[in-house]
Length: 205
Image (tube, rainbow, N blue to C red; front, side, top):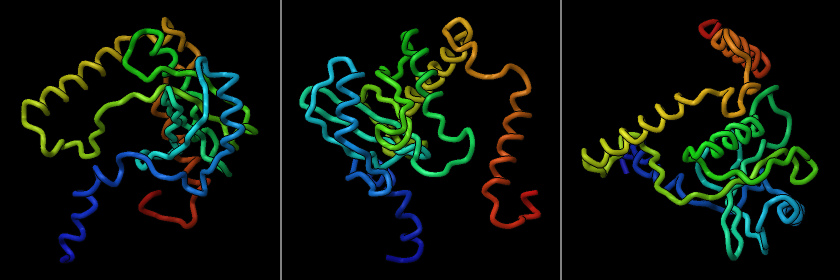
């Protein structure tokens, strides 16, 4: 393999590399017995035994496939350990998904949020696992122009429908502060950058 082909390999293999599940990373192992007990109490219709695997792809928050003999779920958790303030807010994810699901918007059905870090080591929520295709390369290689067009149109339609919701009307009035969003976002990113800074980078400043 030449240097050029080696450099191209990650792009060529992205679909394989990031699709599906694997054994849980030792850094992100969780108490399966504790999770099983919690789901028995909090997820309607749940019945073990429970099998836990970790999704290969995704970013930021560890995500797991939970399977039983009759159902499949997805668990999203806040990573364990010391984190930057306000980062990895899976509770906010759950709040938004719950509000959208109640409106019939195409999101996975949420089941329950756990704020007790003692269950698996950090807060988490559980939702349905929805089968479908995930395209890791947004150029959609291998699809015809008509197929790509249909996907892009569906994406645009979903975004338009999403932006048509009045947050207050669907129960998200207290989700975030109104006004000055960009000033708050840049300010927060700056604080997070300073909190994780290891050396001064004049160009970044």
